[in-house]
Image 1 (tube, rainbow, N blue to C red):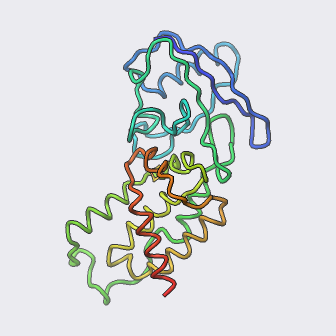
Image 2 (image 1 turned 90 degrees about the vertical axis):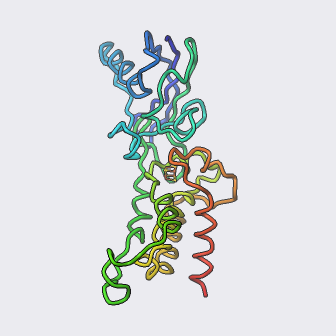
Image 3 (image 1 turned 60 degrees about the vertical axis):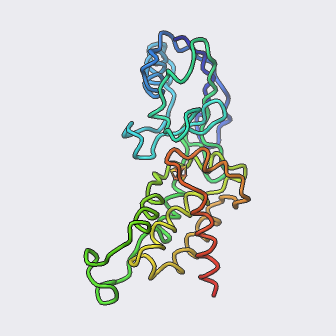
Length: 246
Ligand code: SF4
């Protein structure tokens, strides 16, 4: 396959960026999107041009590190698939691809396709954990029975890999899907329920302080999420927030 790429190049947070055109030649349909970018970068290095910076790590769809906007869609055109798990057979010979970084006020561009997602870390640090002593209150954790529906609900929320695609997809740049997954995964468990009110208050405040927008129910986040995180967790977080006010 031969493809024409329009890739966002930006030297740093304060530099002006622009799309540069590159040709990707003889790309195997079985190669991953990141392997295709590796080939393009090798060509750029051979030509004495700086390679395109893009975040990636596990390349197994579980670490949440990779991510770029491909033809206007965070993580590209394949549903519930991270950028690293996207394969070139999803595209056709002769296609043009526009490749951009996550676009959100809270995610400043570091370089090219790399953005600073530490705002998500700040939300986690504000309450995405449980620190309550639970020994005498609910007994040893392994002795506490959790029903299958509750365990499944919590695990579905815990599937969030923190990639930030939901923020990039939201017209408001909201991190509500991410935050709600982190709130909900703990709120339904006995160990997490103890600090639920404090957690939802602190994480919501951290989200707003980090410059993320608010949720106005566009559902673009759910559509872009590679883990299929449901907007039902946003509803759950809103209920937790109202409970915390009581
Ligand atoms: S909710 Fe989905 S899109 Fe958002 S950070 Fe988590 S895994 Fe990524």
